[in-house]
Length: 356
Image (tube, rainbow, N blue to C red; front, side):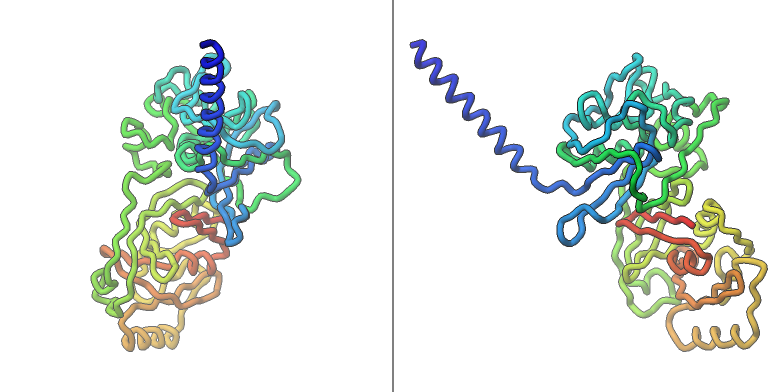
């Protein structure tokens, strides 16, 4: 009887190993790989290229590492919505990298989202942790939601230039008693930051509006039946923003008032009163002049086609661009406006990074 039990136990052990291996083999496709620059306190997420290698910069986050954060290549394991940390504090949306090293939010005094250690939050971008990788809630929740256990994480101390600029961390006013206990990027409906005009990125849109229709429905001025999508996009331009955009032929079109906010945030000197692009010219600074001949030419071109063209001017340079009217706003190609004003864009899916 004892021999039979031993054989049975051994058989069950072999079966459990085989079962475990089979489950692990099911997860063979990891969409992202994560790099952490320990000197610059920056995280970059890569997606796959056409050959399956992780070479395409997809997202970047500002973080805080510690003096004891290890270098090396690791693979994530456990995830925790709340996790107890060193110092009798707690972190949200923790993902284990190796040993006691985790991705997690800036610490909280309790498992209560209103008890954020706001002075520690203001250290994001600096070396400040006990060894883990601290991020704002929006960013660490993105990792928690989108990077399955087994995702590769490479941590190193400089040695190579990061492909995306390091984001500037949001700062909390420590004297603002109402809001200082909350992470500004936390999507929780009770977050007081979400009830103000302060515009910060949500970690994941509750519902991304994607509507396909003919462009004729968007405006009486656009009758050429081009298909477009209405999207809610995340824009990083020093700060995080949410914006409604038209997606037409692989290009994003956003209203000029919002584009000017993005440009101002990254330090582009713009000065215009014509923020909606009414008429046929948009002069983005005081150096611009448009001659009668130029104006008459673009007016004539508009009368000969079923879409509106506008002459953009900045720094003495001029460029003609198509404009689509949507919900009473003229929507401009964000890439074209950035091109003429000397800034750059990096577009990854529905996320747009704008930088100088």
